[in-house]
Every structure is written in C-alpha cells, then in structure tokens.
Length: 220
Image 1 (cartoon, helix red, strand yellow):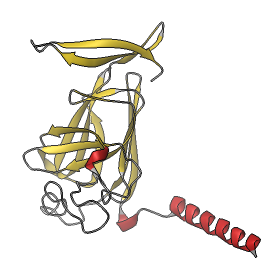
Image 2 (tube, rainbow, N blue to C red; image 1 turned 60 degrees about the vertical axis):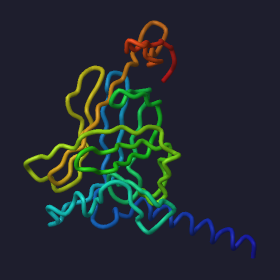
Image 3 (cartoon, rainbow, N blue to C red; image 1 turned 90 degrees about the horizontal axis):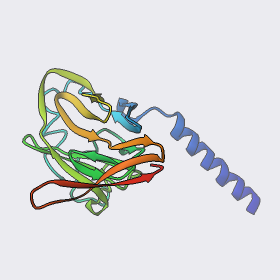
C-alpha cells in the first residue's frame, strides 16, 4: 500500500510539473524574456506581458493603482505593481552593478514598481520566487530608486521591456506599456584585466562630495 501511495504521489508531482511547463500564461498574457550583455555583465529579465485590450486611459492609476495597495489576497498589505503579470517579474545581473547611481550586488531579484504619475519607485527584492506581489515584503528589498515616468505619444499594446542608450559600460532599461515609459539606468564597472574580473565599487563620499572607490578582483 505504501508503495502505491508513493507511486501516486510521484505521478501527481510529474503531472503538476509538466503542466507548469506546458500551459500557456494565464489571462491571455504573453511570457517573455529579454537580455543584454553590458561590457562583461549579463542582464536578463523574465516577465509576463499583459495587453491593454481596449482599456486605454484606464491602465495607469486604475488597473495599476498609485503607490502601494492592499490587494485583498496574500500577506502583503502594501504591495507595489508586479511590473508584469502572473508570476514575479525577475531581473538578474551576473556582476555587481549600479542602478541610478546606487550599488546592487550580482544576483537575481524580484522586480516591482510602485507607480506614481510624478515619481515611481523601482524596487529590487531579494525574493524572486513569489507569485506576483501578493507576498511582497519591504524587508526583503535589496534596493529602491526613484525615477520619473515619461508619457509617450503612441500606445504600446503589450507590456515591453527594452534596452536603450547602450554603451560599453551601461544601458537604460525601459518599461513601456500603453502611453507610459518607466526607465532606469544600469552602469557596470566590472572589466577583465590580467588578474581576472576587476570591479570598482563605491565606498563612500568625502565631505566635498568626491566619491572614493576601491578595486577588488573577483569572479563576479
């Protein structure tokens, strides 16, 4: 009897796992991945793409409420937008980077946006495995930065992440949906030299405001 129960459990796990791999995304949303190599840094974003679907003028401030809200489900009572649909949107960096001038270690992060028409809060969370933002916890934040959203003339039907203004050491990630763009700048200071990967990391500022840096060699 025990062997039969174990076999049934294994079969159930297989079916669930297979269905997770083969089922299309919920709600007619599209799954997407976009990535770019900036210098020696790989940046990879996984997200689900909701569509406007005739809701022009009702996306920002309505479908995506302002700030942090209680969604009525999960443990979070002050949740930002999941910056996509369905599962967590995630962003991964293969080396340490700077986001809007603030340091962020290498790693994979849950990505969220607290929308505000004047100034959005872009959030990188250490929790990259939760479902959406229903279980968002600000104590898991690795970094928050403020950016100004930009209105655009032409409506974009499907949520899109893109890399813009690319250089050998940086790029801008643009989150575009309907008639709004939310962007943040990524800078990497890691490069190859004779001793391996060399990353310049901000340490502190002098009273005069001059930023001092230290160098460390690592396999980032």
